[in-house]
Length: 290
Image (cartoon, helix red, strand yellow):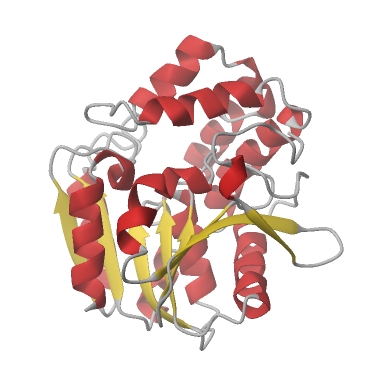
């Protein structure tokens, strides 16, 4: 996937060169003392926050990044410590952009990356918003190996349109019409120059989430934290490996172990809760930041 890949949000993107090998694409809207730094999940990009930026940018500076390997950022595969690498990139981005009053807003894999970033205790990061975050649920080594065997680059490369549409549908209680843009972008990737690299990066993201568990470190998070889940999340927990777990039980792990945590559920919403129920989501963020 080359940076010229024609994605729906290409015209809104700015770029910043963080080092010799990494350029990060990002979308920025609004002004304010507080900066919301949005971090997408596995397989996603900054457009996953497109339903939130307009409203929240009325009160805050909003920046949504494409993590390296995704969207319009530098395309290359990375080492096994994927999420620690993303944390380094996010801290470098904050420094390069001279951001001082930052709220990290991370979804799914991006939530786990946000936790790892927050644990590095940058004075620029003031609060944490975790949206259906990965990392609260733990996996045995046997379970992790099963997931790794499934989530290969070949698997993602072989997905045809019906499988891609089904994967998106699993993120919602009722798929909004606006999600068609996300689907079309994902379909477009298949004919972009760096598609094979994208498939490797997604596979590495799964490995990164499994290789860098954070549950045992949640008590070390010192920031005020808001946890948001969709009540109908079908992806957290893993329903195949953990039949006894529920979304509410996973959420409670975060609520009880993160010292200064608030927890909110949005009804009739799935894993992409911020995209499916943007007005409720945006209201929760505004209330938390007051």
